[in-house]
Length: 502
Image (cartoon, rainbow, N blue to C red; front, side, top):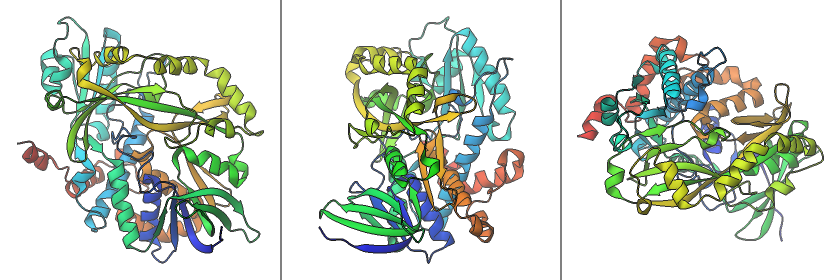
């Protein structure tokens, strides 16, 4: 084995959507910085960002009912929905900038216009959805949302879902036509192709094995060149750990105080994929339902039109599963080796609190195909088993930490940035809404880790993202302008949609 030492300004670990986004932002703001990327697989966007491993909803809180809980007084809390929607609009603005500046091309290869719908059954749920609609549609971000509990209207929205339903069934849906389907794997690869054309060095089949602080304050990264079985050492003043579930172990290796008392709980997913073209053509939307009682938020059932490699597909799920791996391509020892003396009590606390979740996951794992088809029939009453195949989706690792509200070992459902006090290293942990909010999350990383540069960078950031630092929900005029410019750049404009549907 030989050793090689190289110095960079920035090291990005993992070639997924997060590193692609941070690298693309920094390349615009400080083009002379030397940036290196290390990825253990042989191409970009193949783990959590991969089209089959990521729901691709373009999470904009248009249809996800778990983002809008009902409060004890019966009112609907839309705070999370507002935040997620604002964040997705920030992502769209940056993608539009990349298209307009010819850094990426052919946006239809990664984003497609697609209605987003929420579907509920039962009188109580219908009333919940009606209240949710009234609350959300009063906000400028969601003003285009429609509501209906008329079965005839619903048949025009989602004929496949409404076919053969009982005439007296209480059912309702909301629809918003400005939703999208996003192939984050394709977007990630486009962004990395651009970065590599701008002399950012991306090393595939390179596995980061250790991260330590050197005496001069820089971070030393030990990397295995898997193709040549060589160990390399790279140093940088700033390191970003964006390796999906693999970020947990690497964060622990840094030894920073902020990495202590944090655990990870892995959850795998499976989807039913339709193999019948006639069925696929009868549905054109993402339709989200309500999660079963006791089910984790990432298990909200949804029937999704997807556009994968230029073909229209139809997926239903997810069905939760359990694997101790932290990555789909990870190791069966990942969970056990993530337990350290500093997070043992946190992990034990989570185990006690989440017995019902564990039971739910076990029940999901042992389900037969026919049981999964029965769940699908809640959405497609006449679904036939032979029309659907089961595929394993991505692996997600939920953050476990001690919180004031939840106490020791509280499971977190969301995306979380962990950074050192001096801003020299940061890691991204967690799951949904993840990829959809990548630009906002990476701006947060920059604000935490490069506070000394943000004032100088702000004019350029606002040029790329006109709503930076502004809430579009409180600025309807800017919202209208942003909608027009991003939809035009990303080929999502209404007149183009109509033209493409004819």
